[in-house]
Image 1 (cartoon, helix red, strand yellow):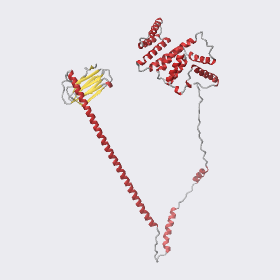
Image 2 (cartoon, rainbow, N blue to C red; image 1 turned 90 degrees about the horizontal axis):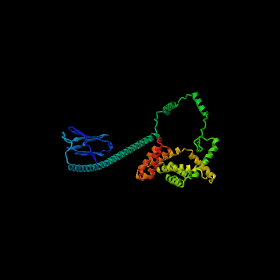
Image 3 (tube, helix red, strand yellow; image 1 turned 90 degrees about the vertical axis):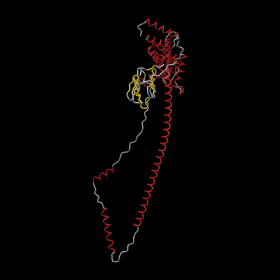
Image 4 (spheres, one colour; image 1 turned 30 degrees about the vertical axis):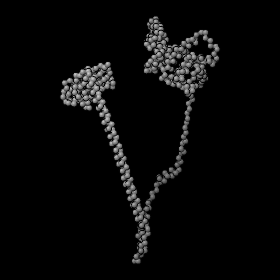
Length: 451
């Protein structure tokens, strides 16, 4: 049910009505505003503001501004006079009828505006097509006119060339001139000899020789340029190395022994990631393989399978949850392994070496660090189990309970009790969780100094 807003303020001028509505702890982008000539509504859940205006306003000239903590409405009056009050005094039934009438009017107005926009859009499209046709026509006409102008220019050039060639042919053809009887032939040839002599003198150029220029030319002729250098490509291949430290001759034998033992240890646990087929490089396949190892009691193989699955995809919560459970089981297995009375003489030498390497790799870490891995894996699984829903409720409860057990093993009983109570809220009918809460609270009462 909506809560009506009554603490709004308003004032007026001859032309405007100013309304200020406060926003109560609601983001401004969640405000639903509806305005018409005689009715204004603003809904921001769970609050509702509505007002039935005393007179009509010009909604096209009105303004609305939604701020972070305030809604500002500036409504333009149709007639310039002062109002006695802001809204009409209407009964509930009259308000409903008025709302329906306003809604129908707004719907008709929206339909009319939509139809007008559609008609205007079609007119603009036709106008755009006509303009495009006119532009194409002008471009074609311009291209035709330029082509005709170039054609006329080329034809005029050809005509001028033809006229010039005819004139040159006429000039080059020899003409027979008849010499008069009173002129001597030698007098006619003398002017021709003078003109030829002047042309030959004008063509002769005096050459100035320079010793420096001659010397440079001789040096350039004797100069021998060096041959062009040959080029090639060097390929550098680095030797693959499994260790991060530099290679040393004194440690070669020790490193080879270490690699051999590690390979035997991986094969002994039954899971070698380097030997997987391409179709087995799948996190879901690694999870199923780890579950198979876990059911068979091969906890180290299960941890290797889950870890390889996490390296392929770190977004699968089941890998973290199952690996945390395997760490718990593996810690109990090593305790049983160190118990007296276990016969290990039947194993072969290779299996014993591999088993010793695996034991050394796991047992070199302290129980605190092993339990820390359990807590970390549970937290990672819970972070990936989102969104929270009924489908993952049991998985979340199991992870929280396992994390509480890890915290209890680390000595953080107070935090472990809180975690176990959180798991009990998810599974209120689980008797095992209730018993664990009772045992933890009893242990904490005996040792209150624990964190």
